[in-house]
Image (cartoon, rainbow, N blue to C red; front, side):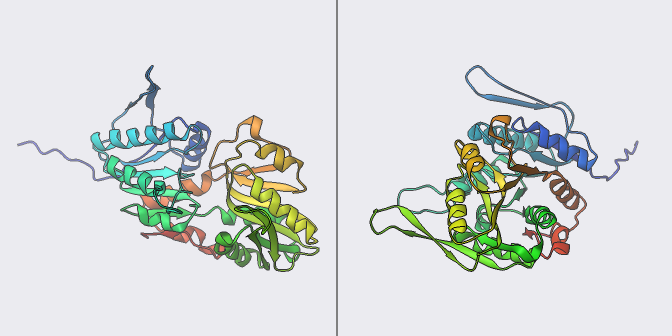
Length: 333
């Protein structure tokens, strides 16, 4: 009987949906691997077809898709890609979502509301995902929604390094735009060695059901205030917070956020405000019509590529951040 020898060697494949090809190419270049060729198109009625153009049998497959506009289409495409990988006998499927769609719907605020962030995690698992990788979730609890390992990457060291290169650390005060972001802001203070201030929002007693009064807890007078958040959508809250800081004597305000959603009218609001710089990463594509003079976009691709390498080689994703005094939260090491 002839014996067939099969080399026991893992093979990494990186696949990407159509939502953000530029980031996918950047990640592939940082990894030093080509994107696996994929055929994808829409039928006339909007249904999506996907077919991989090379074998993925036995591979360690990483499927990248950022949940940008139109968000529902790109989530569905990623789910179809995961299903195709499972049916093509990929050994392990890691879903990479630099921006996790529906993350803001992570709990019920009132009765008869969905927990959509949990639904997205369930859909990934049902489709066949073994592992999830994402950047700066809206709340850390979303990690618990996925039944499997979750690698929660942080853009904070990248953003903080940029801020520290522009402003003397002794002049900086880190500002949380609300009570819910305090924990994130505290991590910034650890990296920058800077004091913390908090914007406290309360209701205007003269205007029912509206948050109108912004108060600053902490000393911001003559300080360069770094307002930190996970995302900027329409920019309304951030601009109001910045105005409050200037009213309390701030010398300058810089905004740093991981995800630049920048829905209209964010471009106009931010450009016309007294904020001197808005720093985001490229977890989401920012079309030319949403870009503006004060905007700085930093690349998240090297961090994602490094995390892919650590997962593929059974290394430690957490160790990537230890030199920055801030670790990635990972449910496996």
